[in-house]
Image (cartoon, rainbow, N blue to C red; front, top):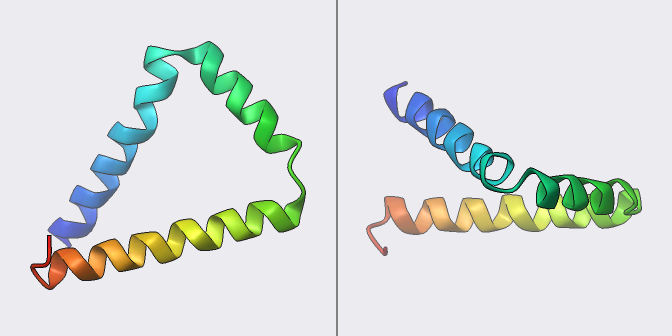
Length: 64
């Protein structure tokens, strides 16, 4: 449970960096995302999840 809470805390920290440092850049990025087709967003989400799973696997196996 502690690992899950740590992961959520790190996620919040990482997601808060861009709006804190450059809100204008975040606004532009969100505008670009809104204009993407659903299929593109799904593929991006899938790629992100698979990358996360692979990274988690490597970390847990001691490969990184």
